[in-house]
Amino acid sequence: MAATPAISADVLAKYEPVIGLEVHVQLLTASKIFCSCSTRFGDPPNTNVCPVCLGLPGALPVLNRKAVEFAVLASMALNCRVDETSIFARKNYFYPDLPKGYQISQYDKPLAEHGFIEIPHNGGVKKIGITRLHLEEDAGKSLHEGFPDASEKTAIDLNRTGVPLAEIVSEPDMRSPDEAYEYLTRLKEIILYTGVSDCNMEEGSLRCDANISVRPRGQKEFGTKTEVKNVNSFRFIRAALEYEIERHIGVVESGGRIMQETRLYNANEGKTYGMRSKEQAHDYRYFPEPDLLPLVVDEKWQAEIRVTLPELPEARRHRMMNDYGITAGDAQALTRTRSFADQFESAAQAARNPKRVANLVQSELLGRLKARGLEIEQSPITMAGVAASADLVESGAISGKMLKDLYDLSFERGKDFPVVYEEEGRPEQSRDTSALEKMADEIIAANPKQVEQYRAGKKTMIGFFVGQVMKASKGQANPQLVNEVVTKKLEG
Ligand code: ADP
Ligand code: ZN
Ligand code: MG
Image (cartoon, rainbow, N blue to C red; front, side, top):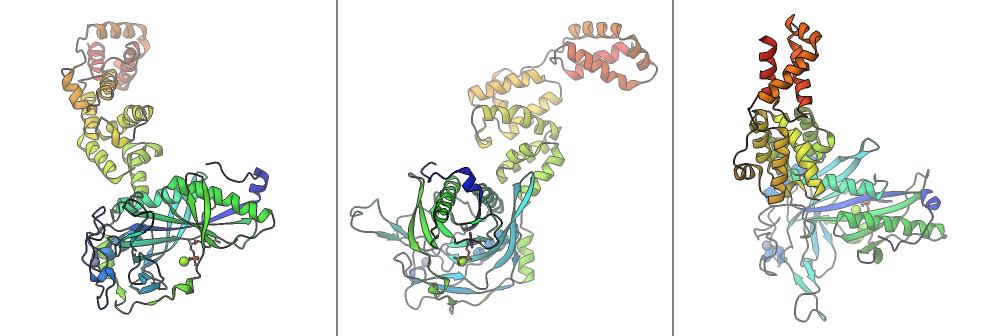
């Protein structure tokens, strides 16, 4: 990160950062928000355009119902109150990639308000307020490179013009770059679970503007903020905020004043640069969009959308910890994506013993992945493979030690468990009991008191004997087989 002005830790500690984030997510509709043009990414420039999204005179917008439903679903997932009536407004400004000269957005009556996201904080959770979620259309894209006379001209691609966006504005509730990072991670995870956006930052379907100010600790009023725009990864946003915090403190400490402005982050240098002083809100001359009726999402429609809300990551983690007896950390890994959690749960539920599947994921799979720096989606062993291996252990066909060896082979060969199990000729643990019988005899001879208790009717003592034989076999024996052998001896 570097490149930040050197300020001593003592001085930094005198100030408290205040951060609020504005996140745009592109809604995954097939067509644009006010016309039927395709939203497909990567098509040749200016092929997905029509009189409406080009802003030609006389063309009228027609609201895409699916975009509304997606935005409502996202609002609900973010704990927002959806307002029955919201109003579209024109936000006027001049920019080459905005053919109409205004963007249709929502202003004083947004779709949804008063939400929150919970982030982990000091062993508990902290609520970060969400001020509002509103619907708007995207602008086009200015291209500065990749075409013949790029050194003299800027080209405009209007395919993106009119693609539906949900803008999610947070309260200034975050107090460190780490909290901002955590908020973004949670937000993305929640939106991905709802399926309303793919949140792909490289393709611009999730974009974040970070607002930052500092104030002396203990002061109530906020300091003057700057806004860092167009940062294309969560890590860079954290780094840009770290840089800005030190810059602000440096300015204030040397008796200067922070100018309210928009800044750009240069990831190569790890620095931000002033871009333009922030327009005041009234410069946009917002006014109600005369070509669109107020948007009404009544109770009935809201209820229809609410039933499509999936179980959200945080709730799912808690339920899975209960259902499968797994730790918070493992629940986190297993719920990284909705599809992965679904795969895990359907495999676990199809297995003889779902908890054993969870245990194997925890004890045998995650560790091996971590050691190789792999994400769970890159595992050679699928969830179905883990479930198959769990069933083999459950039935006593293979031992725990054999399972470990087969898992190692899976990773070496990059093949799923059932494939390797076949390749190895369906190995089975020995059912030769002679060695076990010898161990059992010795243990029975060495523990007359426990034998007496067992024969007097304390049948639970069987666990003691099985445990001793397992120990003598260094965990190699098949517990079920041991149980059979020991029972026969004690009863006989
Ligand atoms: P603007 O009128 O400049 O757009 P808003 O009040 O609409 O400002 O807030 C935009 C974003 O900036 C919100 O996410 C909000 O939480 C955040 N914000 C507002 N004031 C501050 C501040 N003093 N420091 C940091 N963030 C702030
Ligand atoms: Zn169009
Ligand atoms: Mg604002």
